Amino acid sequence: MNETPQKAPGESGLYNRIAVLRAERAISRQALADAMDVNYQTIGFLERGDYSPSLKLALALAEYFALPVEAIFSKTPFQPLSQQVYGTAMLAERGKS
Image (cartoon, rainbow, N blue to C red; front, top):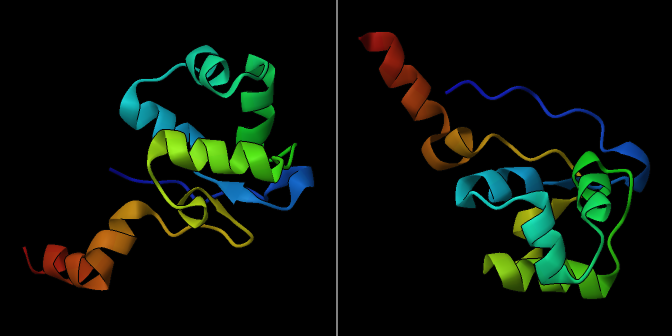
């Protein structure tokens, strides 16, 4: 699976993995918004980086996804998960086939 490079973080200055986490769990924006007690548009704003979450919302998202906050939000771009998990060794192995 090829992952495209992340775009600039938008106005918030934060990168996040909310869309990826939602997709992995087949959760709609509306369902996540309902669980967080926010408008579904807020989830879209967060995903695009147009909005910085309050500390309360960031912690609630972390609890919802059962992940540390820093696994969801970052000031620097996230590495693709495949690169984080497999590193460059996986890429070298693919080249040998």
